[in-house]
Amino acid sequence: MSRPSESAVLAWQSLVRAHQAALATVEAALKSVRQPPLEWYDVLLELERAGPLRPRELQGRLLLAQSNLSRLLDRMAAAGAVERRSCDDDGRGRLVAATQAGRALRLRMWPVYAGAIEAAVGSRLDEAEAAALAGLLRRLGCPDGASPSGAG
Amino acid sequence: MSRPSESAVLAWQSLVRAHQAALATVEAALKSVRQPPLEWYDVLLELERAGPLRPRELQGRLLLAQSNLSRLLDRMAAAGAVERRSCDDDGRGRLVAATQAGRALRLRMWPVYAGAIEAAVGSRLDEAEAAALAGLLRRLGCPDGASPSGAG
DNA sequence: GACCTGTCGATGCAATTGCATCTATATCGA
DNA sequence: TCGATATAGATGCAATTGCATCGACAGGTC
Image (cartoon, rainbow over all chains, first blue to last red; front, side, top):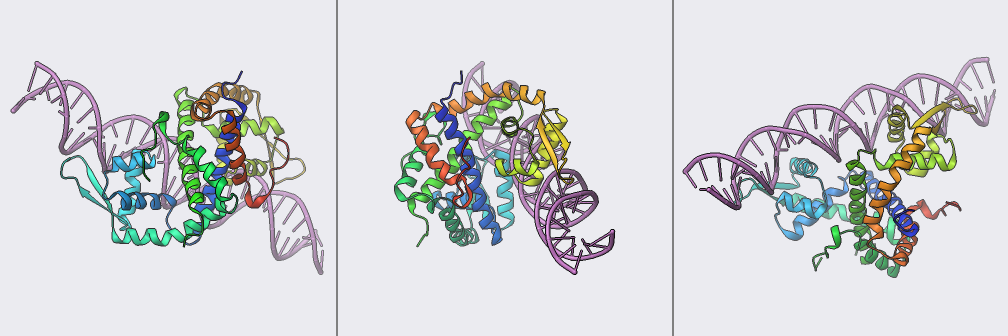
């Protein structure tokens, strides 16, 4: 009667649970040392990796809703972590870049973040298991079977 | 230098992404037919499985924050999906139960939910993969190596 | 019983999210 | 060039979340 297999439903349930638990661990770790939420890290990392980006681009990479991203960038800009410039070749657009302070912030966040990842994931799975998990999860992460574009 | 292995970090990243993508699929499906958010389903399912429960108990099972659950139950009660009774053996407590309307609602939600799970998970993994994924994820879902209490 | 401490669940309030616009520009076709 | 339509990003507003606190009661001590 049910379209998804039992295993698929089980996988979904576990996914939700595991995510809730792991995310709570990570966010709690960051908060406990008064650091900003996880998304700040992600935004900063993308910006450092790819250079200044259009908000739209960030939105796609981070799967954030447009208005949420807009306000997230407001907050980050207010804190001096990112900078909004206007975009030369598109008058509607903006270009967002990490500031020096933003880069420094990301570096300060990493040890905390890393520790939490270890607690939430690393300490519970061995290398091979973690790799297998990542492999399976990656298949769920991209809309409509689009292959994740090459490098990371 | 980093405490978690590369694989652990990769697994974490994939977990976040996969969850975002899958959750978006499911919530969008529910919203597209004007059904309430996913959590309603979870609450109703727990209540049907385990009978009337204390909010505290639900909170533990669903990993919700206390105040959020309190208000979620407000909304569900306002919609007639659950019922709050006072608790005989503990004057502070309440007992929450699914109503008949709540059970009916859950049944209406299931086909939509199931379809979305199939789209987000079932169609992307075969049986064995889904089972393997569920197994790995379950190891992340419980605080501090507490074993998930027996049956499901 | 009075009192202290801990737990349960509710609630005020600020921060964040989601949704529906709104403005400014780009893009396309006549 | 003009007008219609589409896109980028910002913003008003309602709904939801997170946090701190509150009131009510349980459990223990004296």
